[in-house]
Image (cartoon, rainbow over all chains, first blue to last red; front, side, top):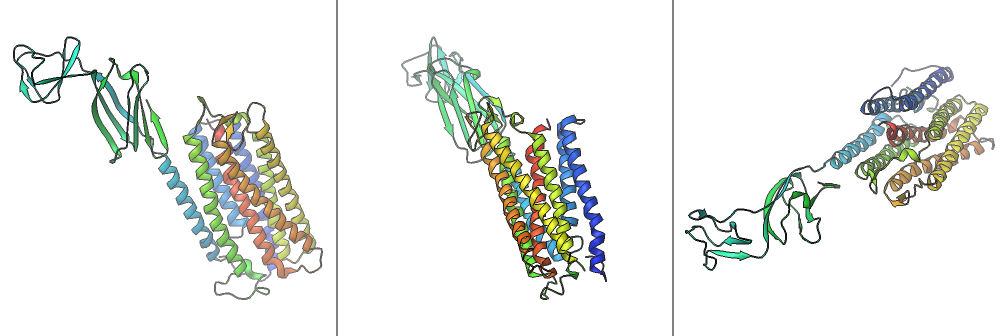
Length: 227
Length: 213
């Protein structure tokens, strides 16, 4: 990689100054790194950028001159770079994989408060409120003038129906639980399609509740996010 | 040509034109890059996903001693200069200078190790800020695991390097050491410089970045 020298001893002697200058440069750059951390003349992200840059400069300086790659055959450089490239590939892959924070774009819990109305079209499984009780429709039908509790059109349900709906950017585990012990609720599921997890579910609760009464926890890879 | 100019007379000719010992050392250093690459990325990932201790943000600056670590960094960088000069001296056949430079490298390597031992002891016993392998301030945390494994592995490499250098230093007194051993000292030097470049990455990434924000 370099020119031929007739006098190896003279060539080695010349390198003394190269090594000394490099060593001084390394010390100076390290000094700059430490001073930047103390003084903080620039923002945090910029400091990290500077540290990244100075590390690369120092790294190259050591392998190129101290480790003699400057004067060695290319095969040594190739061998080392092979390992270095694989190491960097692993590094960035791990960092990338770890940077998959799930985002809870929507999480709502809504209690059903719709009163039964006469002469209205109802669909199967729809909930209505009559007095203090809740009923679920057994089939698609049009309501008559009066609510017939004992007909086969409606079933009274034990509890207050609430609709849970969510939209999450990515998740492999979703947990929703009530924060009020007197109004227990727990739901856990593992989405098979882990990108844009969106859905809803109706559940019966013993008491009326709002979104604030629940906590949703979402995991994607190694990251947990919660509302 | 090369580095091999002085070696051609002492090492058998190979198809690559590079002494086999040197090829082997570069291949080893390449593989060691992968080893440290995984350790560093593991530390960074866990630093990110375990950013709190209990309900508080993990501020490791309370336990780090950046002045001491900066000092040991300068020491390691200086040791690399000694090492480069030792390799240069053996190529020139200057045994006295080789011995002196090896001694300097050993001393600086030992100072670095002493700093690390002091640092680890200080971290583990820091009053109120104890950083152990499995906890920080008495609460379970993974920071200590990844930190000690990474810096401890580097320290082990330094210790191995010191023993290796010590071997050549002692050998130089036997009267058998000659320019024919230049390739051996050079391989030892490659290893030592590698330990230096690993620290060049560890110091800003593990220590200084904690102070960036």
